Image (cartoon, rainbow, N blue to C red; front, side, top):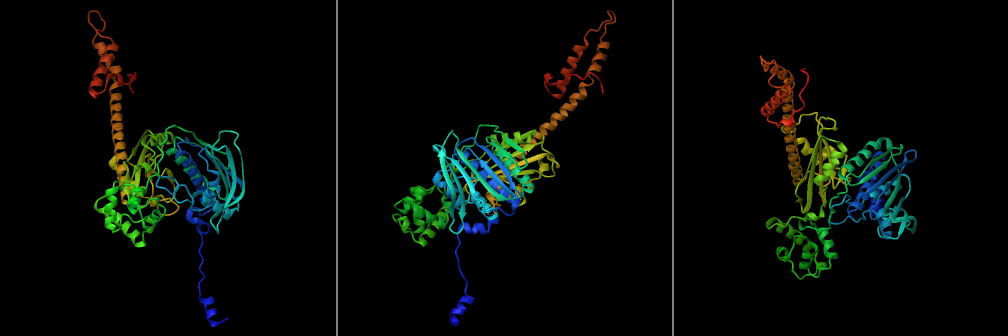
Length: 535
């Protein structure tokens, strides 16, 4: 071997490309599967979220069964059964065996975002138990049901189908049943798993959710209403939310014959006049074919959109892509689950950040069966998904804890729960585990305004309640002396000749009640029964 060859081998670096399947297999903790405890939680979370998306998006009242079984020591099989639309036969292997493959890469609010979710659980199963995922799917409108055992070939990011089969449906069931066997620690994961399901039930009171735990307990959250939020609609991207790579992909895939047609066809908020103005700023011919745009022209077009937005302004992003929970459902969820004495909710008007529409919703529950705590109990949600980890890093925590609750008649410890929900086509999470929403100024401001409004409502309620209590105390103070006063006045009204009272004790009591009612400003019929004995 020559000296040059030896130097190349000794001092050279070996370069290798890996696909997304292998990357996330090697770095599974990035997806939330950080340890056996978190793994059980994350698997239940991803499977429950998928089940709800498969039903809600298609306006099917969800009926979901979650079963967690202990197979052997530290090994658990998690099965989630839903009544959604099911997964088509040809899509099953890819939906569960190819990382970054999803039906959610559209401009529409969904629980999932990255196309990881359940695929990360499949990878974790491969890493810890070697077991493939078992999927049974019965698509809506299909005469057959399908059974697959799937894992991921991490070297190619292609599904590895271990078994498959199908049979003719015997009944009308439609939906998907997924079983994944993983290494886990149920005793430590239990509280977070059950909390996640309970918090999901709060914002989905239209769902029937049942959980069967490894220790044989059955927990059910029955459906409390048949009313559901309107499902989100897919919309075209907004020009302010576009980057260079996205525009490249649009230009490559569009069926438009000219750049001008592409802008009008592929984007919302761009009409003929706006398209011409943007192309003029970018210095691009209107008749140019999209597929022939150069790298520099793509960059110029993105800059032109931003500049036009700054100078002229686009219409706000379409709110049709969003599906807020709604004030009524938030109230139903909080009231039925927490049993407070007072509950209110507010859905703000849609707003936007960086071309992405979003809506902030806030619910407030106070008193009743809520135990007092030293600070408000915060329930955080992102696209209807509960956020349980890293609470203090979230923008909602920042806002709620900056509020001076004494200004709203609340002194801690107090029985106060605040629910904050942010719905968007693109949520600004701080990391891939999707536990924390970043401090985006537009979102922070909307949360603050919403929390302040429900806090003002609570203040009005507490002031009214306090006045009613003070009124009741005054009422009792007056009323408890009525019998004695009536008896005394009866004696004073005795006619010296007939030796009989001129007025009955009952008449005196009624007259006294009229005077008391007038004095404290309430209708006579609202006065309580006269206290018969003086304390």
